[in-house]
Amino acid sequence: MYLHSMEAVVRVEVQKWGNSAAVRIPAPALKDAGIRVGQSLGLRVEGGKLVLEPATESLEDLLARITAENRHGLALEGPARGAEVW
Image 1: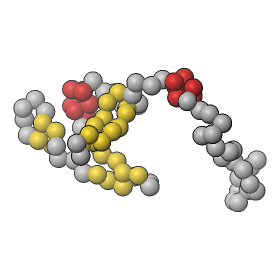
Image 2 (image 1 turned 45 degrees about the vertical axis):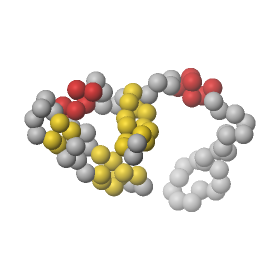
Image 3 (image 1 turned 135 degrees about the vertical axis):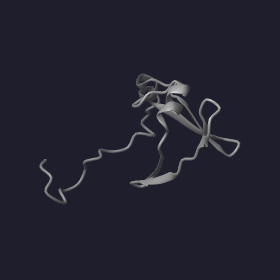
Image 4 (image 1 turned 90 degrees about the horizontal axis):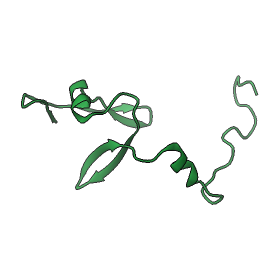
């Protein structure tokens, strides 16, 4: 629930989105939190609650953590299975 400017609490629902779940965040809540559409966020569970906050790692930071041990193979391996053009 979100309480905007001491007004009524806004209840949101968790919805299915592909194999994941999604929550629509009201625009006033985004504005109050200083978050913009398209911004990367970090998600963690704290005390049984989901906490979203601006992501602190840059792309360069993430790429620097890639090692030979955690790197996967090519995503486009194997024969075509449909109408793909290779």
